[in-house]
Image (cartoon, rainbow, N blue to C red; front, top):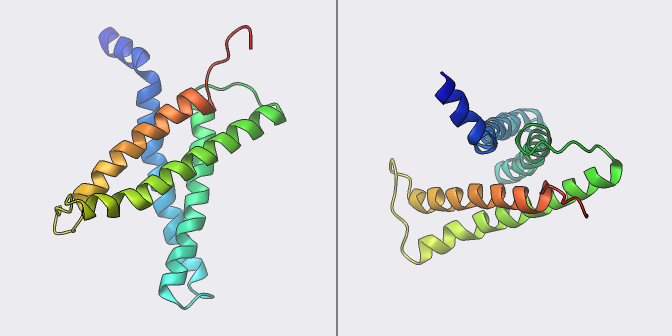
Length: 154
């Protein structure tokens, strides 16, 4: 048991990042479904409804990820307005960048021939590869830019 605790403490940040990443995905999926149901009464065009629900669920998921990353993953203690605004702006900006990578990366990989299917879904290998890259980039950007630990002389 002591060995497990030691391993957890050693890799706590990465473990917490992965746990809250899964929860963020569930928040995204759940809010997407909720927006589809709630907005389906008002928006009858399927593509528009899906697009609006997707954007709103992305916003909810990014806000959830920001709070959980700040509090439990990277342990950022400051709630001063300027600090939170800077962290939130940098966080959202980095998520927009990695979101664009995901948006454009999957079709690009498919164009260059990485279009194999998984469970009959064409291009899923490209989607999985890009998703792994995005998860790693999100972690690195959050650690090095958004919630970086301040040096004593900063």
